[in-house]
Amino acid sequence: LYDLSEIYFTLCNDTVAAVEKYTESQVTSMRKFLFIVDGIFLLVIISMIILMLYSEITKKRADNLGKLAYIDVITTMPNRASCEKLIAEIKAIPAENRVSLGLIMFDMNNLKLANDFLGHQGGDIIIKDFGLALKSLAEKHDIFAGRYGGDEFVMIFRGKTESLLKEITEELAVVIEERNKLMKLDVERIQYAYGFGYAPPEEEITIDELIFKADKNMYTYKKNMKNKKSINESE
Image 1 (tube, rainbow, N blue to C red):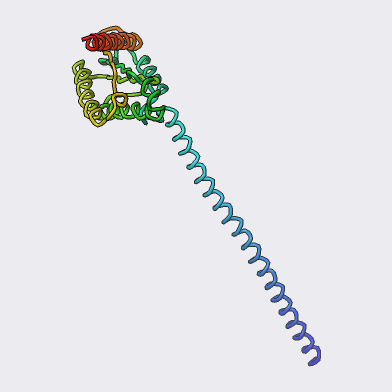
Image 2 (image 1 turned 90 degrees about the vertical axis):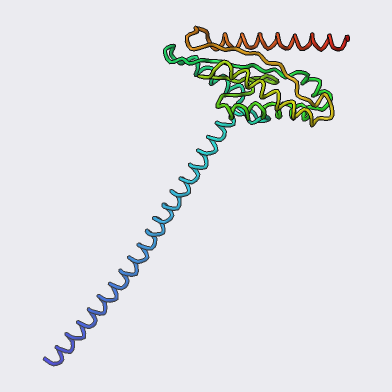
């Protein structure tokens, strides 16, 4: 009986040892498995964060590219596409919601001569300075100003008085005069013509008709400038 009991306890000890060893191996395997799972989970989180950051960067880049599509590179003011976009928006406004509408068309003079004499970089400086002057006045009076073409610019007024159009041209003349005083050569000086177009809210006239009117007045102004110059030169 004693011998059998010894054998029994030995078997029990061996069994417990075997169970402990098995349990330990399972725990170790489980720990390795959980470590791998945790690693995979961490990689997934990191990947998601990277994707979110990349998506945000891509979105910002797309937004910036979208903005650049409407910005003139030389003057940093709205370009032709931006002008046309605003014009289309104005056309879509219902008649009952219309407000007073006005615009000024500007055309730079002697720009070809400036490009020939100073090079295109010199001509670009003249365009840039003129554009920045318009941009500054537009921000001051809360109106739209954009580069409409190569040497053409436009200011669009909504809900403003007609007197403001004249006021801005007078302010612009002062700014340009101060700038021109710093130039050594006549060809470096900014010269321009302009024309008005204005309609109160009750007047049934489209913005296209206003543009045509302002454009016509601008070329009349330009023609008068040339005639005046010819008379002065003949004297």
